Length: 526
Ligand SMILES: Cc1cc2nc3c(=O)[nH]c(=O)nc-3n(C[C@H](O)[C@H](O)[C@H](O)COP(=O)(O)OP(=O)(O)OC[C@H]3O[C@@H](n4cnc5c(N)ncnc54)[C@H](O)[C@@H]3O)c2cc1C
Picture: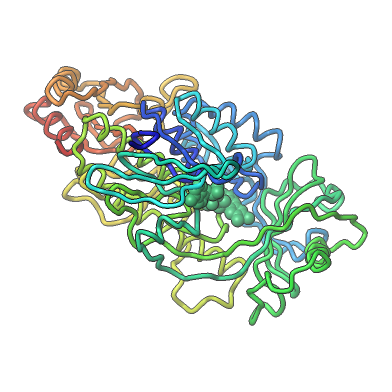
């Protein structure tokens, strides 16, 4: 008999695994997480959290806490820019203020908080929601059959092993995912771009910052290309170095022959100020690469986060796409595990998330090349797409969305133009002070009803009875609802628990009840 039985085993308890545990807990599923390390992240790594990720965290009830904690670490609303050296010449300003021109599209904001601070908040929420978190536990092998997955787990300190039997498994085991490897799923894309390093250091940085509020500072000079990130009170930070030497024919391998002295030289060359005293705390080696797994699912195992897509950290997307993989997968697993949806719903994870992974990885590659690594431009770069489109304007095409016949073919749109079309994120509108339409999308599907819509409430109640799955009905009094959701005064919109539009009726059909039951059943694969 296996020692532990669980509905979902999550392998990897870092940013994406911990997010998945919290999202599943929110959906009433108590997952088990095994994490090799003895705790959550010890290195800052990701810090830019997009509005879409914050919207997902808002449903977990931790948005406010994350915002408060983030203030302790960074001056928010900083710029993304490039310099020759931090003390020297400025080269370009890509974004002057992180939240300029985006506040209207969401009830929340983009912010900076490192994984070191964010992961414990996710851990706490996951535990409150019933997740079983097992640190210092390494999954050493697994096999799957038609009914589930059996994993062998070893405790790092005691050496003891035990098995865990799960209905489904999420591989959140990072860029070198052994699960992905064991499943024989190859990565496809641009490959490894460099053997990069992150130098964590201490130095009095206020004099070289000169009062500028800078979130990400790209550095490009004849000695090196990379970027700085600086934390409050401007005495600690990191310098990423991707390549060194001649920008046209650079060294891409920073690992070979790396010494503390060389790291000090890199710091000096990036700071451009010899007088600044500096101490190196740690150096991390990692591959900058731009690749996507060719499949996101094999049987009962789902890839999420860096296990599914690895991208250079240019744009700050990698962790965010992973958080959204977890958010997208959690409700589907929960609905299938509860018997509310047919198992086929799980087949929609890959067609929805893989295109997002591919788009985002290519866009991160484009930013890497145009901002730091021109020598990689072989004339096949994807043109740069707006950040907002990448962050929350992507469109899902799958059988969990009832697309409209005249739907245009674009894979993404500015969220202001998505217009409530099926497959896009449902737009944010303020309903009351600090209550957004997005706050209606929680555990259940929602039917949003325009002001003069008749018969929709009864239709939702009837669908709940007939399908046996709760469907919440909300009449939306907001004047701009029809414009933003693309319906007339008598229409209605069906929104999934992840906040994506599943179906809409632009005006009242002959039988709202029949239409809603049909759409709801189809999306749930019932
Ligand atoms: C310098 C830098 C800056 C970045 N900045 C940003 C940013 O601003 N915004 C952003 O969105 N992204 C950023 N990223 C990317 C982001 O850090 C990653 O996308 C994110 O950490 C991926 O999370 P993950 O949980 O999928 O994988 P990981 O963080 O790699 O976690 C995988 C976990 O799985 C565990 N594990 C692996 N195998 C096993 C096993 N067999 N058993 C048990 N446990 C196992 C590991 O111990 C690890 O904790 C940055 C990356 C770098 C390097």
